[in-house]
Length: 473
Ligand SMILES: [Fe+2]
Image (tube, rainbow, N blue to C red):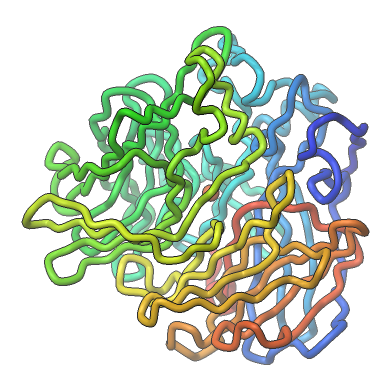
């Protein structure tokens, strides 16, 4: 499957953001170190890769989903990349051209309810024996087979799903459940749902908000799901889609009881902010602790713009200033304590997902490089227990993607594993896979593998251990 891409004006269509027109299956070559014998499974990464020349202004979030995967097994490391074949992708393939405009263009309401193309380009999650590809604005969950990355269709959970699913659903390793949200610019603005470990939606409820919000993540603990009401609001009409940040309104964090209903949600209020990604949350000594990347003002350079000109320049260019932050919700008093944990501008937090919803010590963060476009020049391991961090910079001129924590086979300790990611040279597009020892960050890579093709910059990652791959449905 191939396509062509003329050079266009968006920086997110050039350099290492330029989409690849090719789907490839290639063997990787070790260029340093060796592939650890206890690293067995598939590393997958989703991202935006428009097949056709975009109509109008392009935003990085608009492109068709493409998954890049590396399967580590006894024979070596095997690379594959493939588009997620969504309904929108199929329609555009049949038409031979782009049919949807992106989020920087006025919304085409004639396409309602799919005003923007559901690209499934954002996130990946392994749940109940299958890999699902998800979209940031809430869409279908596309089933992806491993390691060949074939799109198998949409997951309806045996017909029980009554909403869409947004990116970043969370698997509870204790119960095997999948917790998810869906959100819309029209009521109901926010839906919270739970899929049982057996794969049936057992809960789908509206969480009361007084208007549409940009949502991107959720968190959970043993007793609560945590949902967000940030004052970062959709202002969509027939002529534009805008996001307005209302600095005069608080951020609200909703603790939805996992045994109960959304009408029993307890809300905690604090300073206005926004957050794309949560690292983790858990209960401890009468509190709920949540760690995530706070953005104190997502439209910081837009502060003096008149209300009708809030056209989200920072969202367009992703010049954000997120900091790893801890919120402590005091259940008795209904108050919040907040503190910044790390002074680096960093995002894309990842943890050992076996500890999701329970105490975790380490968060892996990607540090922002000082570039016009979003790029990561280092991975940081933040240690919550000692309040210290280790920084592992990528080599000069190289930028890494989101790392994923891969436990060593047969181990359970929180940092006894590897961090794996794609690392790409800014000028040449030369691409590698780096395998780092999570407990010895800062040391030389355990292994570096050369990818014979350029791997465009992308979004979120997942690790599917070989044992789970062997049990794939
Ligand atoms: Fe995300």
